[in-house]
Length: 344
Image 1: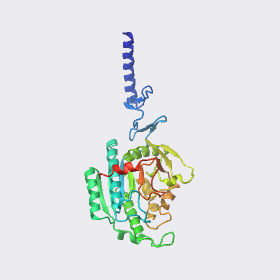
Image 2 (image 1 turned 90 degrees about the vertical axis):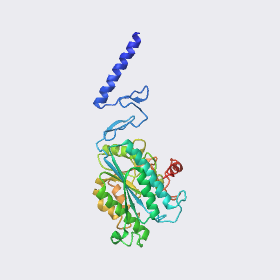
Image 3 (image 1 turned 120 degrees about the vertical axis):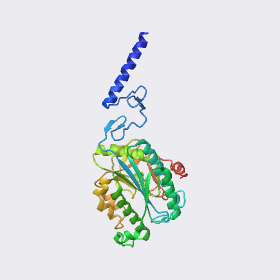
Image 4 (image 1 turned 135 degrees about the vertical axis):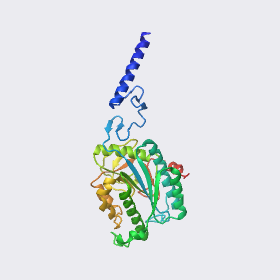
């Protein structure tokens, strides 16, 4: 009987202690059963509290000083151009529209999950479309309508941008019509972001397939790493194969479920904040006025002064040719993720 009372007393004191810790904002670990009693979670669950603190074992707690308030996806679509600069077949060898629809579906599914996880963050999708078929535009609208997410679709008028594009590029060659339409769409996306976006902006092409956990990880990692660095940053969600073809020094950061490493180059799919957009406006717009070599050189110049981070393993796959160094990221079952986005 005495042993039973002793257990009851210990149990009562433990509950009081847990309540006090919870009120004071402290977390305690019960390593005997691999749990955090203050959150009523197991240690292998997501322990972060959005906008307040990031918890990673065994490193402990990071106070969030950079809270995410909103995320806008600007999706650049063009179902009429199969490949911008080459004629090789894409991975899975489908029509271009199929990549557009599955890419959009992967974004929608990831945003729907993030909307549940982060109910206080405002999410929306804006499609910046150039010259897609009417049936394809209606299909994209249908996907967005049934998603329940806030969205809009804007058509790009190339004549509004063409006069601002240098006709001769950095290789002293004439800029192609396809490239001018691409530059116009990027310029349109930047203008949309400058006018409409409040916080984080994800500029993405219509041939990237995303993991369902993409935006849960991005939001948590952005808050944690930006708070740690005390500055705004860039994210590229793809772990491109080219990153393993050179031996470069880097920095490694810890996210929620991924590691993030500093990179010096990306394509024109990247995430950043409104503050960074405004800070580097002229540099970003220069991509739309002159075809550099490489095309993304202005971005690479920005990364010399700012952190751009890419996840390991990848959160997204660029659906280009199987042999492309900017395509299939390693150590992820992308066929499975491709199939999961079939029913759009």
